[in-house]
Image (cartoon, rainbow, N blue to C red; front, side):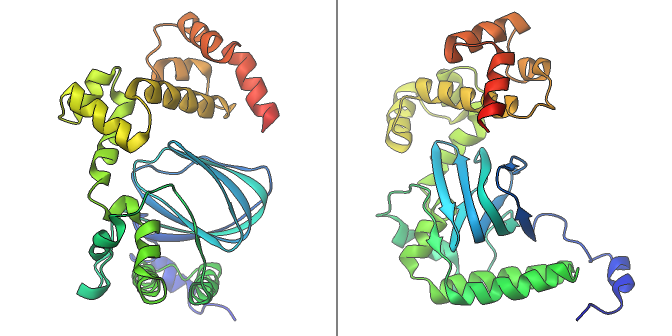
Length: 283
């Protein structure tokens, strides 16, 4: 079966989503990288087949066939396909407005006793059926903006209808729990903060309060965590051979190529060129 009158769909101004609400379907080969995740949007990954390793902020997890996981806004994320994968991704910028009883924001009470560790949840049979029809629409290029919004509403109704409140709260914890405001502030500002004091100022907190709260939420000192994040981001940039080293020098505020080389020797025991070669070989 094929979609009729395709040209009429193409010519409609509502044919494609504006990217804020969208669904995408991918077949990805083992060994390929996922590095184009926009940190200004939320991502819901459904693994229909395969295996993927995800590095997201301080977390590193391996997710397998039959699992769904959520990447919130502001998370610095990259992935590696460990086994040929069939993945459906839902991309959105905000929680949608369901009815009063089914609003995800109402799950904050269920989230209060949860320790968030970026875990996946099992894809239940109603979601599998939903994904099957969704993939059919995508393959037939039935990509009307209104259709995508309807499918988004259907998806979240299925979550609230067939998953317990505790499971939904655990999966969507970063965007339903008020305690995540501090984490979001940190993740939104640490890249442009050169020191812990600058980051504390950006979060509108005294240094003492900031250090105490940071330790509670991230389990590490702000200084050490910022060093680790910088190292991770630099390695992620070096993983892409199309990014010139001089661009990395400029982006991360090194005064010169020599300064960057000294940094890499101190933290990785090798030059940027050697590190890039090793990272690509290890991949």
